Length: 231
Ligand code: MN
Image (tube, rainbow, N blue to C red; front, side):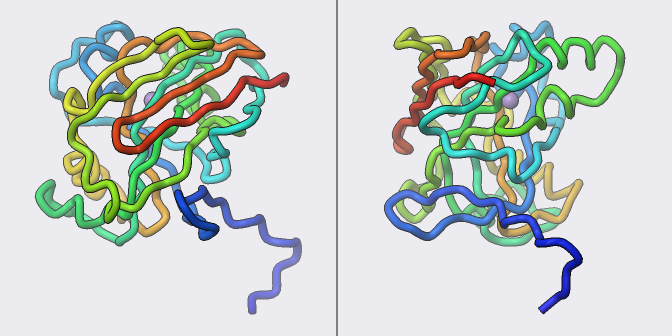
């Protein structure tokens, strides 16, 4: 046993559907602008340039249930519904054809974004961390093993706020599907079991207020529901 000078942080983890065992989280990678209509609403031309990535801390992943706190330093907190991929096997420089072998399972997640801070970061050529990597910025529902869901290359993905549809898309519209995302990511880092990948959001991102009820889902993965709590 390693002797630590302070108590080591608790292992970050996310629930797994239908049991008590949890999936331990190592790192969280997120793809930017992976649906053409969302790229357009963010003012970008959705040409098929290579995907780009940003990250969140492992412990930014919180259960997508109950109350998720409205974060500090923002007046424009945005929802981004995303398919989450859980990596169960290590891999470097994997081909798109072999990439899906690394997948342990899938989940429904929301990439919460302090859009006003992101706008400033873009304008001033600063990093995105403060807009993307804050506490509780990644509400995520229970993961489901690929053995039960199969791989997800199509199916509806949606998000509602107070019962009103805000985002609606289809996984078939991913510019870079899951296998390609994993292949690109594995060129940059050695993927390891416990890594999560948020695969990008369809169009319709928008602001959340304290008290808003968020419901969201992905075909074959079920639904999540949480409210935005006080800071
Ligand atoms: Mn996103």
